[in-house]
Length: 241
Image 1 (cartoon, rainbow, N blue to C red):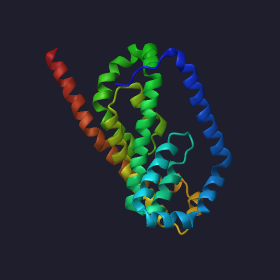
Image 2: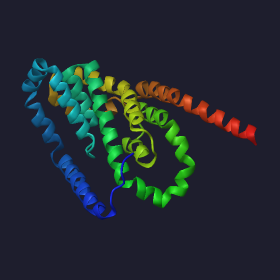
Image 3: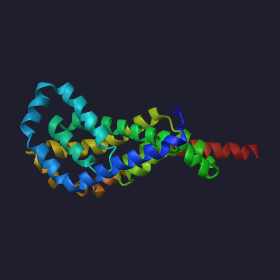
């Protein structure tokens, strides 16, 4: 249970959060390309560091992904590519998914702490009819949405803010759901000869029908248990009537 936040502190916290997000957005648009080129300048040291201390390098990379994806800077694709370049496709994909799952829990926890009570005071009567369904099937809903990368991440991140989905379900569904895409992108990163080349690739190089159709199939498969569960509930409800 996340404690509610005292109302008197809310303007200060929202102000600081807005300042952080605004600064991160400005820096991303101003220096996004320069940051990639600056990091690429340390390619030799990064590769040597990963070879010398792979476990420590992996932990640092997971932390970078975790905190990097909290910001509005759309750098998740670049981080997945970099993970493949530095650690190879299998390890890079797992580390990237670990960081993304931890980031989703962090965003969900902060959002629920700040906004859950306010949202339910304002729209609680409208949300009440969906709350049990989403909370019960939250794992499958998030898993399906993460498997199909066309669904915007910010929409998925709103689900545990609005509905009381257990954070262990958020973490596991995000981790499992991102593994396929992370592996594909990390494989591209593994094939690069220079870290600076990550700037030349974009999500459109990956999001093609040959990938999206199988992922859509996996997403539908992830929703199957929820569909069966809802069908049984409705059938029981009709039987009681």
